[in-house]
Image 1 (cartoon, one colour):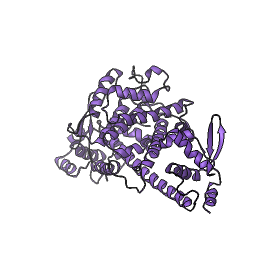
Image 2 (tube, one colour):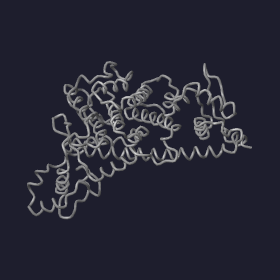
Image 3 (cartoon, helix red, strand yellow):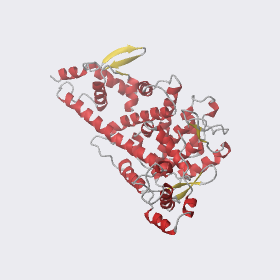
Image 4 (cartoon, one colour):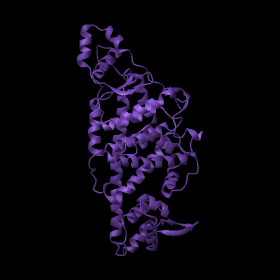
Length: 447
């Protein structure tokens, strides 16, 4: 990836303007172009308004942004503060996230029902664990990774270990979300995330000990970011925790969603560990946003959407770093990702509701089945109808629905006794299989 061009110097442009042109630029200046917060590297390819040059157009935009930007209590490696701006598009994103992620979900059968909550939460944790690890190089199939997590088996290789660790880090976050964060807690999360995955096991759960860590382009090895010196990391992490734990009256006020995103940004910028920085950054994002009451975010995976466009993720960092520490670029990118993730969850819920109702309609005519199936068995049959030949284990069913082993065993044996699942002995346990003609079996039971 090419490092974005550093914007032209504002003072130099303004020094060469006539009073008339300066007045025009000042009166027409806006922080965005058609609602888009453009970096100079993007703006320079667009045709400027009539009568002004691209440099002068940039100066007009910077004038508008300068009056909007506020300094944060977070600094770069040279001690210069990062800045935050709140253009209109950020306000729009925050409005929707406040409404959709902290309020009541609009779904007839949503994650608020007890019988669905644990199942959806387990699935979302699996999704984030897999995609967050894949962003940092984990290479395994989704099916294998899901089976590992559902069955609770031990990981077999490095990639599975990354995903296994990420899953347990997300579970840990749920137990500490109401507690303040501290450097020791961040090191604990890093230890969970990287256990058994680093060249030097001692690096797990400790700050890096040298300055030979950098961010490079995967394609050609070009260094695109050199983080702060390792000698500064301890104090920088303490300041970051103070920012993370700041109360509502702190100055400047930072919206809770933006605060969570900035934690994500700073871990990526500081790169305090030899590896696992991205996973730690995203884990802290989830801790922060959960602590602020955005309960729906537990059910979405931001990494799923970051993985779809990783270059945009990196570019959002670079735009900030090359334009006077303006974090607005990164904030907007992450807000768009969050909005997509929330929309994706609503679509997923709608799809699952439709599938479950379809299964209920199929079963409702059966006197033998009516009132004999609980919601867990119904969910399994809904999945089995879409995946003929699928295998189910007691441990996987247990973990998917957060029930005890005996309950999960009774569910699967009950379905087997009704002829809805096959059963075979595998080692010391059983594998229950969805027959290819499951729909026909259910139809016959309804006769």
